Length: 477
Ligand SMILES: *Cc1c(COP(=O)(O)O)cnc(C)c1O
Image (tube, rainbow, N blue to C red; front, side, top):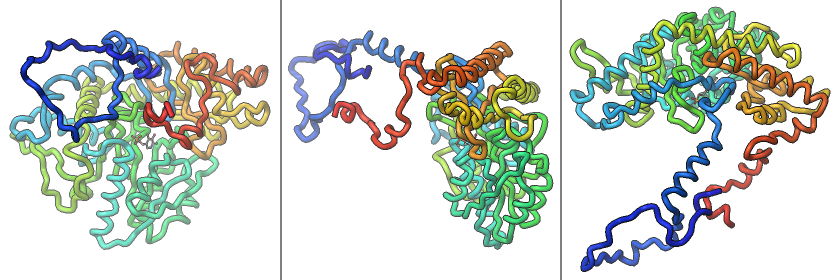
């Protein structure tokens, strides 16, 4: 139901004193809105409507959410509480620096913590998401190379990469060169050698990659790129796999983005806000977007004068609320950040071991924080697809995994349990997956027509794209 459908003429959710009699306010004819169509509802109608809507939603707070690559971990409520303090919400970006020293300190300290975690030296907190961070990082690489007299226009991206990698490179004006993965699911060194030439500006890599596999030849990969005077970009979406264990900076990466809304515990999935800070090695610090937060020993300040800065890439200083949540999370976790990655990896491998007899696990068995199963054999033998299985999972009250990504695995189910789920929760998921496997062979129709127990049944995946309904008025037409 839409709130418009509860509308009844004359109902209202307010009561105001009657107007003063002899004051007449005449709205000029040309300013009167004739088409405004607002629902007329009472207060209780509104409350019930929105409570019902919220109950139709599924989130990390309602159940298991193994959406691979997205790191849908539980977000401790203390982070929300801190981010909603007046001191955080009631400041203005144009306030004098002397009156926002605490806020600048939070940004400065978060930046330092992130640099330590990733093994880089300097950082911008401006980008609003991972993809925005990629674009920022690639622009930094571009400007650096140009300043040093190189005319390079190619970025190499493996075929297992997230779609935003080639997209960001293309947006920044590069030609994207895709290279295949080898039989282990890693960067194929021969293919890399072949792709590298004097036009190579850099390589974008996720490590562990989107299969959840650590690139064991990362040192050699870095060498190949650096020898060609290119730079290495680290897509930090999978940082949850190795905090405290390995640093992209040590692996040879020059530019790193962080998805604060993934690894550092900010609710996401409803469209934002996110935050994608970009860290760089020392030699790239003069290329960061301005301003950056600095500390002179007495006060924190915003530094605008950055020699080769790529300029501003977002209004003001970044999504401050997310910055505060990430900082609160890092402080509360402290050294336990290492245990976050430990548990995330353990949970993913537990699921892999409990399901690999039924669902294919292509490439190597040992994974980091996520696993990619293939339903290709099931599809061949029963006609049931990964999409059908994902829909059937919903019937058991669990959010579906990511499907059909990475592209190199046919009929892919990409599962990332995260560290915040208990063994009981994982066991329940494993049971459900085993049950569904049985259904595929014994009663494939029930899987193919799923979901059955959700409020909304199987959607037409194409219709919303071909025939978007964007307003109530369009719906009524
Ligand atoms: C999520 C993700 C991105 C993009 O990050 P956004 O914050 O969604 O823009 C890039 N690469 C990988 C591997 C991801 O999982």
